[in-house]
Length: 113
Picture (cartoon, rainbow, N blue to C red):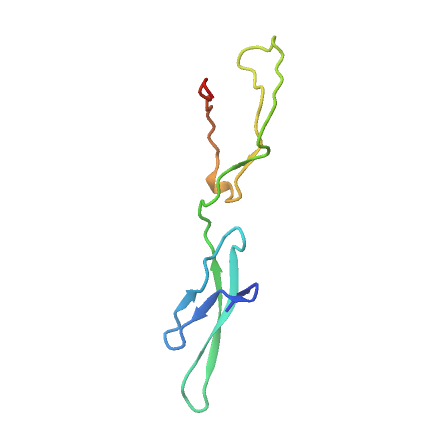
């Protein structure tokens, strides 16, 4: 049983041993949980044993990429050669590198806006 902010995250069935989650897990909050599960028999005296369990939370693409700023002003010299790079935005995705590379395209605002 693992706790997060005093909430139980996992439960184990007392007769089945089945492990269940009690909350939605989020990779960006915690990517791994480690705990022990114990089994005990009904003998006299009762005997028990424990195993170590590690749950790895797999990342899901649930966050959009974020630019370093919401607005950029770019000044360009009029004599700049064609095909010169005039801007490279800073962008990151907290879901991690599995969602990269990023793809970019221009969105042209309608002229009447």
